[in-house]
Image 1: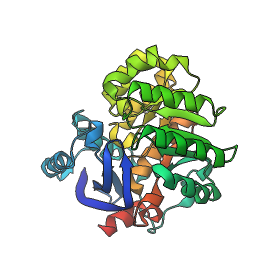
Image 2: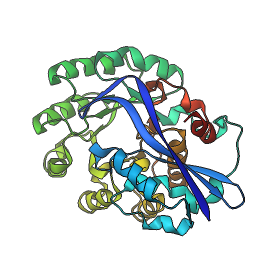
Image 3: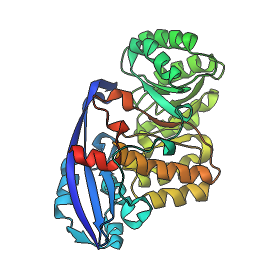
Image 4: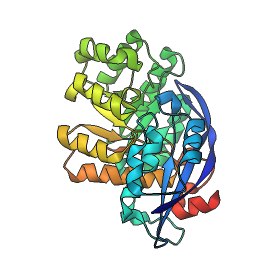
Length: 330
């Protein structure tokens, strides 16, 4: 039997994160604590993103409140697909490899090198002054949010950013589904002129129209297209793959994708070109997500930089803490 306890959390950003979905000022979620009959402890995290199609925080809280305080690990498989962030939060109950006490300090030897972590830049002109400190820390891949200002202004900034980034750097552009087809094609023309400095453009159009556009128009350009909001849940992931196959790169957020064992099995079956990305979770969710990413890499899948370079956005220093230490902060 396992005993469940849970605590909500709220983390403030240093500055609001601007995306095509609007301004985001705080990250809210739930930390789960599991303890078995021998007193061994493990943690999970529920980090919903309702604008990506997950449950709301209120729905996740209601689920936790009605879940039995003592339960068998096999019961977790019954969590419905309408609660993908909750499914992820309960991932570790069937895998005790993460159990055990710690000293409250994050083990840095299990963290990936900054060289394989894509760092998130601020939208707009601030990106021109933000990339260099991240470069000096070892990051070589950067993500820049677009579709948050007038396209002419953003294209002008993009040209400046491409000129100042070192030759070795790679840039990902993330529109969060906020572009019109004509705007997306203007961006692709600009990307094609960078001689490969842009790794891909992510979710240029909304999920409702992007697949048709990729099939009919994006094939005319060299720059790769990645999908994010279109593959937010496992069911969407499956459906998009059936239509698109290997024509796109899949950017997936493990924290909202549901049970990791299903994702792992799906990736093994289809050997996808995949990027694992942050949902702005705490170190608890990060560790669970990295377990999945490292497993997929061990299978020989393409090892693209993971999109977890987000710690600089938070006002706290939780990224330096262990899972137990995060729990004790709440």
